[in-house]
Amino acid sequence: MSTAILTGQPVPGSSIEGDLRSLGFDVRTAADAADAEALLARVPGDQRVAVVDARFVGHVHALRLGLTDPRFPLAAVPGAVTAQPAGRQALTRAVARENSAGGGTALAVDSLADRVVAALAADGTEVHRPELGSLVAEVPADPQARNEARQAVAAVDDEAVRLKSAVKARDGFFTTYCISPYSRYLARWCARRGLTPNQVTTASLITALIAAGCAATGTRGGFIAAGLLLIFSFVLDCTDGQLARYSLQYSTLGAWLDATFDRAKEYAYYAGLALGAARGGDDVWALALGAMVLQSCRHIVDFSFNEANHDATANTSPTAALSDKLDSVGWTVWVRRMIVLPIGERWAMIAVLTAVTTPRITFYALLIGCAFAATYTTAGRVLRSLTRKAKRTDRAAQALADLADNGPLASLVARATRARLGAPLLVALAGTAVLAVSLFSGVTWAPVVGAVVYTVTAGQALYRPLKGALDWLVPPLFRAAEYGTVLVLAAQADVNGALPAAFGLVGAVAYHHYDTVYRIRGNAGAPPAWLVRAIGGHEGRTLLVTVLAAVLSASQFKVALTVLAVAVALVVLVESIRFWVSAHQGGAPAVHDEGEPA
Image (cartoon, rainbow, N blue to C red; front, side):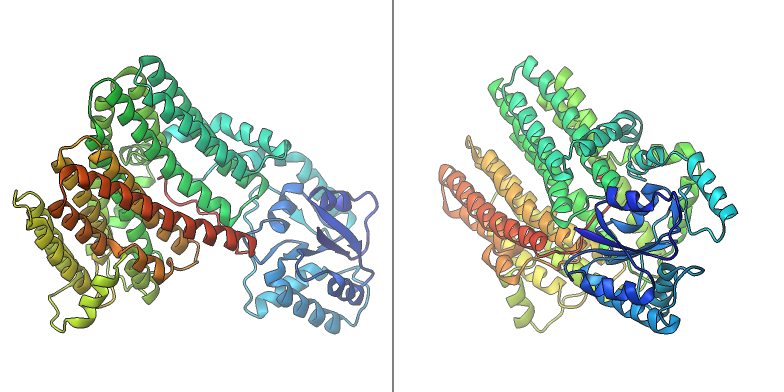
């Protein structure tokens, strides 16, 4: 239970007590500042507490935004301030200071809440102030001002504002115009029935898995059902975020589930399409795995670039200025958002092509579209990086090192070798090139030699902090090298079941890499070092797969890939679930990352 302490002179006919109770607050009344301090001290330290001026006039949603958002330790709107357990100490000090300054006199002509906010700001304490837009929140000084404020409240429908703000501010064309106009009402329907965003997220996952199962039947009816269910899964995927924004139900666990399930849904659907094609006599597992590799590498480019630049200084460039200028022209905004093939456009394309064509055509279109999008976005980011003179922070360099996922072999190389081969990106490029040539050489042990060279360059690439203009490309290079190695060797094995096993292995490793990203985004740090050591790091897994391909027969290699996939999946899933559940139960700060359309 949250507690709200009303201060100041009560106003006859005011709805403030009822509004606060509707938001889940237990309302208590303080006669003066001393009484407010005493009431605050009696509220348990693990509960949210708010100090609200009894003369407050405004929309209920303004109070909701100011007093119930779980992401911020301290938040305020005019006439009200709130603190979660993490902000209680600062709030208590500010109230005590204002009580001493005011001498405990009645607060008929001054707002204790606003004075407390000013005191917090004077101390340098960060207080979140939500954007209210057309919503009203004020403490009128006299009856005339109060009447004008009430008229302003009546003139604005806060429910309409609440519904509009439930929609993500930046989204793709398909999501904005084909999904959000009605999914926001579905989100409100869910909120009024007590459903949580996590429940809707889970429903979206289940729907997508059923869609994958329908695609796996290999029948035209199954493909049509799969396409329809995939679209409905995406509607639910939009609804969970809109429900979180509508009801301010943000959580660390919810952010992780939303991001993780998105990847699980899409890649499970790829597998379902491949199974369905196989039932019809067409083997498209290589295309399915290629699509997963390409999409995962696209994401790591996004993540690496954003982590490298989000806190960089002098973070401007002519390319960025041109991009901002294009964004000021309406139609170019939507064209640029569509050509990067975000999740809405991508899933709509997959759903339609599944229903009316074949899995092979679907994957061809997906690969071509994603390849173009990857080229477009990566080229733009390279230009921005080369034309801006940004100084990257130690935090950014550490994030890139964590995303690189170097294991014990690369670390050993970094410690043992004294000669430095060159700039990190050039070294990583050289190692990746040698590995790529060795994979297609046709010589049995050549990939092993290439993997050894790759391991050495992986250790050398991280011998110094990744602060170069293009060093954010190092983690994507490593992802492409590892995933591509598994794909090529499984295809070269030319035995039934090798590519599905490779799909499972890449999926398990990709989960680990996505999990690393979500931990960094949530300010939780990288996965523990023991986990990276246990699963070998990217260079260790790459070397192991090349050795297995060289020493085992094709059928034995298939079994080895399957065992390796299961082992990696078990280790990373168990540790990841344990971490996120513990973080949620331990009261980790709520996370809600709008991010880019994935």
